[in-house]
Image 1 (tube, rainbow, N blue to C red):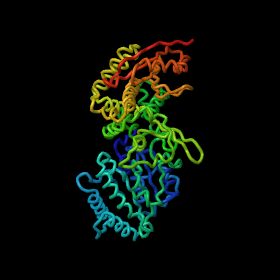
Image 2 (tube, rainbow, N blue to C red):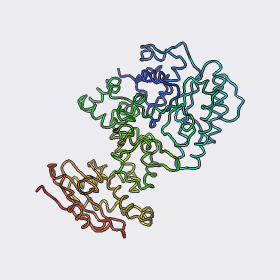
Image 3 (cartoon, rainbow, N blue to C red):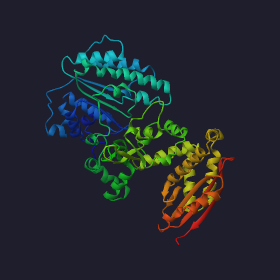
Image 4 (cartoon, one colour):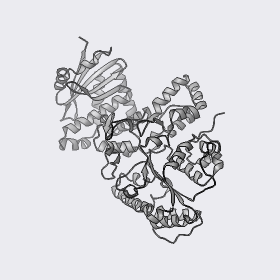
Length: 529
């Protein structure tokens, strides 16, 4: 009998008492508890942070019955006779949308105090927080567990004033944890979030808070490893393989392609638990994690910054990249990394390290591309899908006139008002890059393997699109297509593709500034000499 899946459940108690499937993370939790007392962990939404907080709460409350059969109960080392009062605060359930964040926090701390049988006399949220810790600490040192601390900021990234206000409220509130009389009363502090915002007191002044976000030792504290997938979901994998008509090995490869690939240390590769639970719960491969959050504002933000999406794949950054998350100066690439749309794929260097970023997996990559194509092309979702299928059919049939005609239709629908800012600001180059991004997104969605700014020994090819039986070498110019074709040939761009065993076609596209659309274009087939 298949063990019931805990879909949408983040309460450790409910999972255990309901005999639902629980991936045992208690060994990693024990190692965390044995290595320090004050920690911060950043991970994308729906990655298991809340369940970790819930597990820690049960552990410090000494609820051994919930841990029967798990590593921490079977291998000893944890003193179940010692318990600690726990203040567990989730910003995910805090009502700061209908009232000021300060008011919501003050009320929430009051409720926590009542649950512990304590009466508070302070007025502000910070003072109530300090008072609660001091009064609870009279019996035993206090455990503070805070989940999704940054949600009141993230929910207002399109409203700078409110985001700044909430950031300041949080900074003041968390300042309670740094007072000497408070830290003496704390046994353990664990704070989670999606982002590590700059200029929040939590990070600037609480200097004893260890950030384990990229710590290799705790790289698997949340998320599902390959071994955990096969060990805990074995029966579900077998059933899925039967439903798909695949071998176990083939279905595991498909699961990996769709959902694996998150890493924060360049070493451990993880699955998002939410996606796996969606997969095994529905019995079908589709997008689960991406659609579980609000992504419309993200796509709009990326379009407004004229982000060239093709530059994201294989982007190389240094360590300073990970501390650049500021409300009023959001770097699009940092935003995508912090929210889980980009992940670390490789870490290189000694001392000063270099990090290579890319999309975690097919689910995230394809879903993000689809969302961005809809936003950049300014088309409804329903039209975007049919348009992509038409482009795919044109490429499959090697019908470049139809392919170009479809692109012209897309560009004609993009409003002059939207593109006017690029032309007026100089910026034919920005305008050209915008259209290149639209083409790049469209080609990706057709299933074509696309690479942009491909380096050769004589320059950079704008784009190379490779189908299963054809290679297209593309160059885009503001002006005449003949200039683009001359560059392709003069710099020998097709040479590196003539030994692939596939026909190679050169495609030169000229953009007309007057019409803000494709002007002329040329194609030419080449062969190996």
